[in-house]
Length: 221
Image (tube, rainbow, N blue to C red; front, side, top):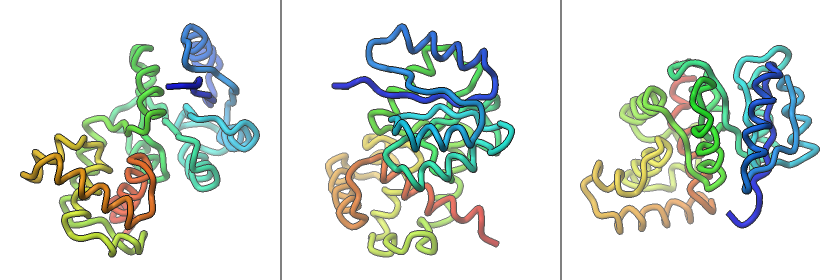
């Protein structure tokens, strides 16, 4: 990365924030620009500081991490949210992904995992653990992404919808090609067409559009 990735950490436990601060201080490519303890703090810090990444606890007093994530991703789409949770299969994680989070990190994971997560999301990658990825794939297996939440989905061919769904589930081009029994070059061609039809610029935006469309079924009857 050419410039430092600017971070904000929001967690109601001061010791956790201090740990992140110490960890980031030992890197050359990350800088912590703000800290908060509530969801309202997160929204304010993003508005005032425009960080690249927000590390946000899911469970906080005042405004919780899910509501804060929804507010941030709607108003500041260039800021990426990584949620922090104690449990890999926490149902709130899926809700946060639906709200626009790019992924999650277990609070008990070794510190190197946190740094790798931040750098991966800064590059535009999505972070889904096995449990959450399975939930997303289960939704995709029920059918193509829903046009009810994103009318532009109707512009995609059925195969392009499949590819978008697999991007949303965090699969790489090689894995998509293997799953669909097509070449990586064909996958790349589909992705180019998806970007053009949805008027998006990168894979991270495709992840958000695909997840919101696919996971919309969870909110339905």
